[in-house]
Length: 368
Image (cartoon, rainbow, N blue to C red):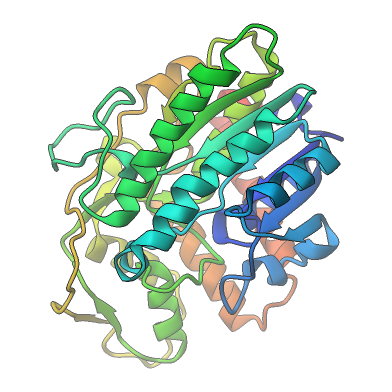
């Protein structure tokens, strides 16, 4: 996988205790990488980071990316070959409650990571993760391309659009210069689902928490359409971007990439919940969903990405169809809650292997 590029490499993952960060850390560890994680806390209970025993599989620093001095210290200590920057305030509803902290974390925090990279004097390849919500979403019917306008009507989206502008500035001001040893790329993805996400105010975690307690889940916007993708899809894109960044002279250096499912994989919230519910042992539950129309904040009703650029430069394309995405997700939570958490790390690794096997059958470049 990934031409064995990550074996024995020193890799920093920011936000490693989060949902995507935990999956990525486990995958990198299985590839033979030496992982160092940076995060300010354990964000949820339960915690995928703890359930996967990742503290024993990596070096971890409890530190806030808003502390630029501490970031430089860790980067200079580790001397990473690769950096995957995932740390963020990721929840739209929380951004309304505390917009300043959201901007501080998502925008200034990203600038601090770029400053830490700028302080390095050895070769390093950095994949900076933002979000599909960085685009100025006017809810048109076609997918956003990387050159489309950035922006956002809510603090979270605006903070991610602002982060992209900061990244572009750092690339052209510092990392594009001849002789610079740091290379960067950004990846934009969103609406990721999969086992082990317990964040608040996210529809899939809310569902399985409620269903585990034999309660109907409250749905805010059942007809909102999203480009749902399993967590392993963007992670394979991040890892592929890091591989190509390291193996080529500069074709993707400084370039942003969209990572998302095919256009036909846009489904409503209700369609998604009906799909994952098929793989949940619901016992005697009679009512699984209740519509809650009391949402007090704006959420986009339609958002999808054009991923042609990732296909061309990274030879990346989606692996799972919608049904498989729902199955991977539903089966993970069903196993976790209904098998007393027995060897959840092994089960998660098995899903990574199954995902790679499907990609291999489809001759997708990163797994060949």
